Length: 220
Image (tube, rainbow, N blue to C red; front, side):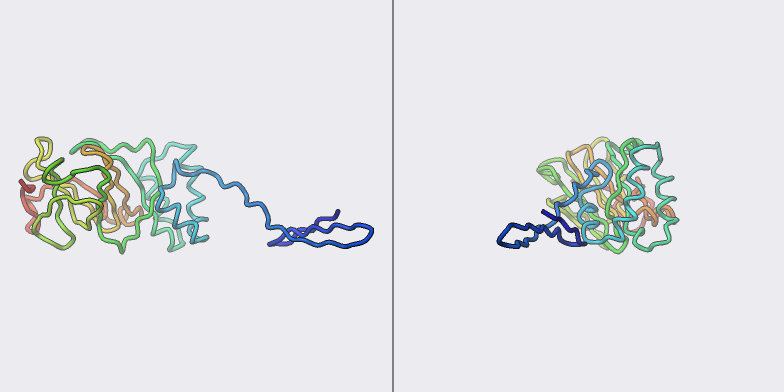
């Protein structure tokens, strides 16, 4: 038996005393490395469709796994990439409560195109009026809406809760997504290069009482 490898096919040649047999087999797919610990699900899907983006992302896997790095340092590295595809990359952090520092010990890369409006994803039941009492400022809107699964396009998040109250909102800028896993814990994915260049593209706690187009209080 003789085997010949081509770029796309493995050709197996078998010779018997009476017949020459050719058959073709597809190559066995190489086992892919599990990168779910450092690359979010939506970005995983995107890099399967875009080899150029996948090559950029691959350079950060070892960095995220093997050396301590802050969100600011990671954002700076991404912003210095010459390839425009790098501007699609975001950084995911975890939030727990107003004004508490974000949990950054397990940073991940995520998909955060700056052309996409701010978004919130509700992955727990009853985030609105009859439950956790979150409300949102819709994208380019003024009047608040009650939180409603599965997702909403927004500028910011309010909550009728003692830890939130009046004159407090979480700003979710363009390109960013807040994903709530429970009433008191959520992840934020924001555009790395945009946030590094201009702080208005970073999620932030704000005082809406100082902003003319933002309601002062959550829905009650």
